[in-house]
Image (cartoon, rainbow, N blue to C red; front, side, top):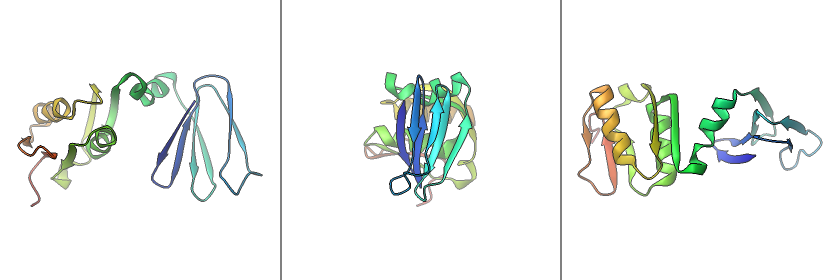
Amino acid sequence: FSVRRGDGGAHVLVTEGVVEVWAEGAEGHRVRLAAGSRAFVADNAAIAETPAAPSAIDRALAWRNGKIDLADDRLDAAAAEFNRYNRRRIVVGDPAIAGERFDGVFRTDDPEGFAKAVEVSLGVPVDLSDPAQIRIGTPDR
């Protein structure tokens, strides 16, 4: 299983066996998750269980193999995922493209390759000149 902290709670993915989840302070409200299940345990102790296709679990756990597997993910969410693994930050400079959807499998340590793929796929400018960040889209400076 995998537990990943996010905004407002934690995502739990179960690949084999059974896992019991709960929030600290709300131990009386426990949910058992079987292999192939996922849940979001919110900071307020709410637990939202959702069934997941095996392919969705595999995509979500691609980081274990040094990959980011995007399947119809928003550009801003994909950039945030790359930023989890790299010091060089990806900044989506144009809010108009932040919601664009993107597919592909990329190495976690190759934000430049991802940015170049976005440039080609979406036809948006990419600025790689700053060693601290990669800007995608029209600069908002």
